[in-house]
Image 1: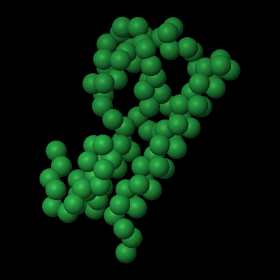
Image 2 (image 1 turned 90 degrees about the horizontal axis):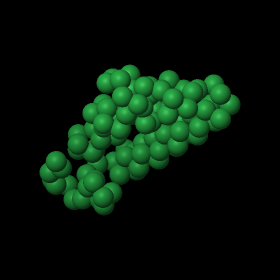
Image 3 (image 1 turned 135 degrees about the horizontal axis):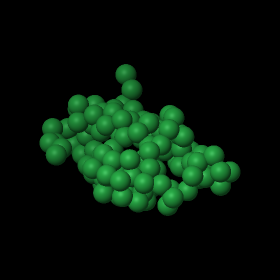
Image 4 (image 1 turned 45 degrees about the vertical axis):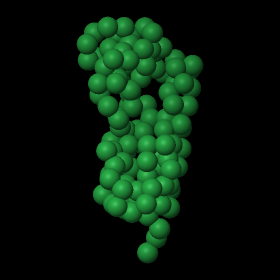
Length: 109
């Protein structure tokens, strides 16, 4: 049986790698002209000027939506972020928001 802490950390590291790679691929696509610069786009949710591209799934790095910061915050975290959070909320690993490991039986908010 694997250590719950290691399971959580492996998932987190893999997620951060895919997230970083997705950002890099979007930046390259903008430089090559495959994606328009975000400042020339409108938010698909509210119609304001877009400020960033939103990834819903980092495994599809160029499937992005131009959104303003407010709508990006409102959309929340990506699908994979929720899976990682579920790892420790389900009791497989107890980790605080700061990344410090907590003892068993600690209630997380």
